[in-house]
Image (cartoon, rainbow, N blue to C red; front, side, top):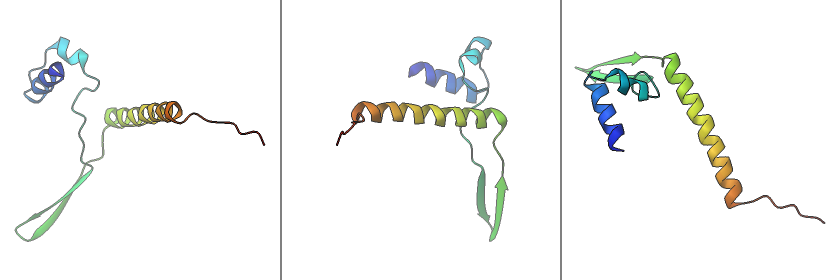
Length: 85
């Protein structure tokens, strides 16, 4: 966990070394806000920013891996039984 914090701080402070950058799963952070609406002085303004390809690929892969892990976990906890009637 400490290594992750060190890498994150170096990333946000724009001081990653080449070795540290090689340890990252993505070239930038993995937070994304697709859309945000702000109210300023009585006016509502909406900003939109679709995720880049790296983020989308990472999110899809992570979702797939999480689904596979959940499936394995559920099979372990609740093995399928075959009933013979």
